[in-house]
Image 1 (cartoon, rainbow, N blue to C red):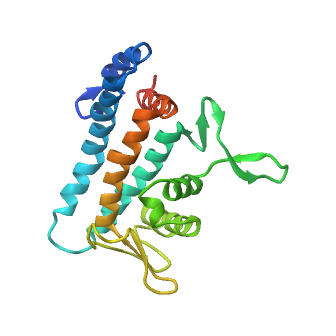
Image 2 (cartoon, rainbow, N blue to C red):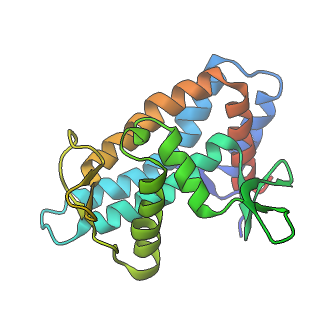
Image 3 (cartoon, rainbow, N blue to C red):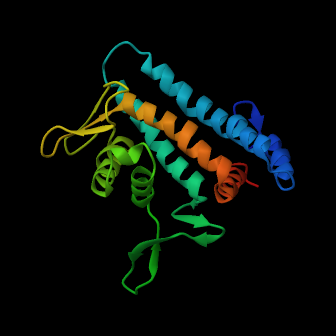
Length: 223
């Protein structure tokens, strides 16, 4: 593979490498803004949000929400690991070369690495505006019946539905004892709020979040 491949719009590995060297001696408001705008937002916009927008403009209502929610499902894992500095190398998550430990133990009493379900649960229950719609139980059900079902079976399962709705809807509603509905337009608004308000403010104010950002992008660039 070309080692100077694009990572965010027209930005390449060489651009990040040069910029990350500058961050070692000059990390200020302007540089953090550049991190966010020119690397993170540009990557998310061109690789995820522009395709979602193109799909959303299809006039026919024949299941486009499946594709849109599938794309958002991939962003959940990225955003959570970006925020916390987790690096995925099959089959484990790593943090500063140490396996990230979860709350589960094997038969010998040793901690087991985090799994994907734990990543989803922590993102949906710890971050606004998602935590207004999800608790631990519903986040686990979302992981199993939406994320895993869409990726592995191209369908939702266990009476979970996907509908257009509108931006004023809650992300998730329970319409019967076991029936749940995900509204992708509300999900779209939630991701916009998370990225541009909640994560952005955290990135500006928190050095650990900045360190984790650099760690993640260094990994993306194979540095």
